[in-house]
Image (cartoon, rainbow, N blue to C red; front, side):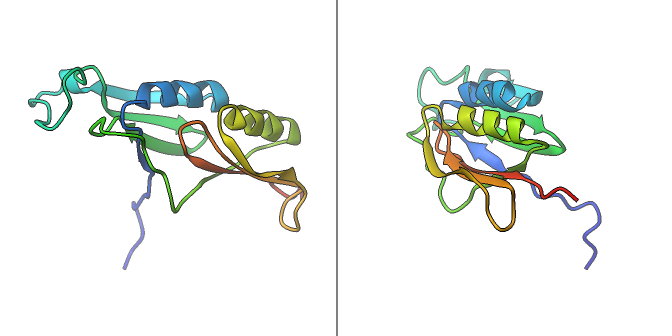
Length: 143
C-alpha cells in the first residue's frame, strides 16, 4: 500500500471557543490562519442541531504552525470540549522559544511536567492549555 499523498491532520472541536483558541495559537505560535468559514457563510443551511445564536460561530477553520496544518471548529457548540487521549507535540528551535511558548500555553492551563532536561531532549515539558489541549514541548538534541 502506498503512503504517497496521505496526510494526517488534527481536527479540533472547541465547542464554541474556536475563534478564541485560533487567536491564542496565532499569538503563541505565530500561527497563520489559512481559512475561516462561519455557519452563516455556509452555502447550505446550518445544521439543525445548532443552538440558537450560534450562526456566527466557526464551522471550519484551518491554520498553520510551522509545517503543520491544524483544522478546527466550534462543532455543535454543545458544551465544554474534552480533549483526552492525545497531545500535540511541537519541536522548537531554541531554549528561549521553547520557554516562551511553554509559559504562554500554561497561562490559564495546567503544567503536567515542567520544562526540564530529559534523556531524549535538553528541554522537554508537558502542559494542558486553557482550552484543554495537551502540548508536549521539545527542544531537539543539537548535532
